[in-house]
Amino acid sequence: MEPNNIIYTEKAPKPIGPYSQAILRGNTLFVSGQIAFIPSTGKMDTSNIENETRQVMENIKAIVEESGMKMSDIVKSSIFLINMDDFSKMNEVYAKYFPENPPARETIQVSALPKKMNVEISVIAIK
Image (cartoon, rainbow, N blue to C red):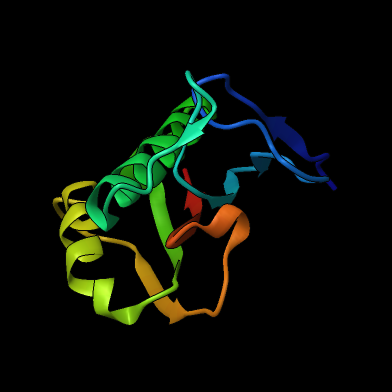
């Protein structure tokens, strides 16, 4: 069995707990849930759901690219929202990162997220 390869980049937030930004096992990348931390400042962008989603997706993109993959290699995403009323606005931003052949996904409303964020997204990519 192949070992886990830890993927880490300074272009995405440092883990705030006992987990890795991502694990690459063989040709499959598992990216931990990302929230809207801005890696260069350590601050969070919760000004609106669009900006928050954009920062989450930029964090995911940085991790995926650090592994040597592309956003088009993402096959599955899980989206966690505090308020399902934000779905359409979040979806508009999310869609820009997958202009064709978007991944399978689910969107789940949850009661709370780390650091009082409004959206968290995790992905799986295969090369």
